[in-house]
Image (tube, rainbow, N blue to C red; front, top):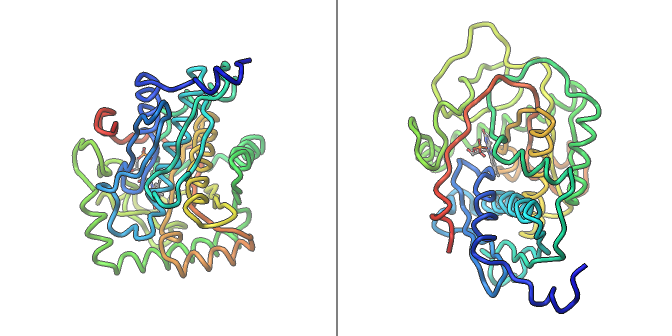
Length: 324
Ligand SMILES: Cc1cc2nc3c(=O)[nH]c(=O)nc-3n(C[C@H](O)[C@H](O)[C@H](O)COP(=O)(O)O)c2cc1C
C-alpha cells in the first residue's frame, strides 16, 4: 500500500496520458464527431470537450458530454489495466463547462480479471446497425448488463414484452420525424456521413440498410442500401434505456461512463450493440419516454443488443490530434 506522502507525490506522465487517450478515442460519439481532448496538468490527466468539434444541433452539450463520459470510462480502464488506476473528479469546475474530468493517480494495483476483460473489449466494440439474429440474450448476460449500469450509478431498463417495446418504438419514431423535418439537423448529419474512410464521421457502409415501415426502431440514414425484400429487420430485439438520477452536466458525464461500461460488458459477452438517441434529442419525446418508463430520473440513451453478422468499425483520428 502506498503511504500518504507517495500518494500526494504520485503524478501521471506523458506515457500515461497517451495510453489513456489511445483508449479514450475508441469511445462512441454522436455522428462519430469525437468531441474530446486529453491533456496533462500538474501531473493529472484532464479530459475536455473540444469546443471546435461541438455539434451545432447539440445545443445543450448532452451529446458531447455522453461521448466524453464514455471516453473517460475507457481512459479509466486503460490506467487501471496499466496498474495505475485513477481517482476521478468529474466535472470539477462548474465555471469551466468543457472540463469533463480530472484524473489523479490513486493507489497502484493490478487490474481485476473483470477490469482486464472490459479493457480488452475496447477495440472490439463498435456500432453494429445491421439486423440481429433472433437468438435471445441469456439471462446471465442480461444481469451483467444491468450490473454494469448499476456499478456506475445508472439504471438500465431492458424492455420486456410487446407493449413496452411498442410504446418506446412509437416515441422513437415521433422523435425521428421531428428531426427529419429539421433541415439544420439533417444538413449536419449529412455533413458527418461519408462514403470513404475519413478519420471521423460515419462511413455509409456502417449504416443500417434502408428502413421499412414495419421496423421497430428508427435508424439513421447513413446509406441507401436496401435489404432483402420481405425480410423483417429483427423479430426479437433486446432494447434497453439507460438513465441516471438527474440531467445536469455531471449526470450526463456519469451516464456516458455507464453507457460505455454496459457496451463493453455486452461486447465482452459476445453481443453486438448500437445506440439510438432520437427520443433523447427531442425534449417532448424524452419527457414521454420518462413517463412511459415510470422512472424517477432521466433517460440518456437507448441501446440495442443482439447477435449480428460482423459489421464495420469506424475510423478515429490519430491520438496526436486529441492531445493538448
Ligand atoms: C450520445 C450518442 C448518441 C448516438 N446516437 C446514435 C443514433 O441515434 N443512431 C446511431 O446509429 N448511432 C448513434 N450513436 C453511435 C455513433 O454514431 C457511433 O458511436 C459513432 O459513429 C462511432 O462509431 P462506433 O460506435 O462504431 O465506434 C450515438 C453515439 C452517442 C455517443
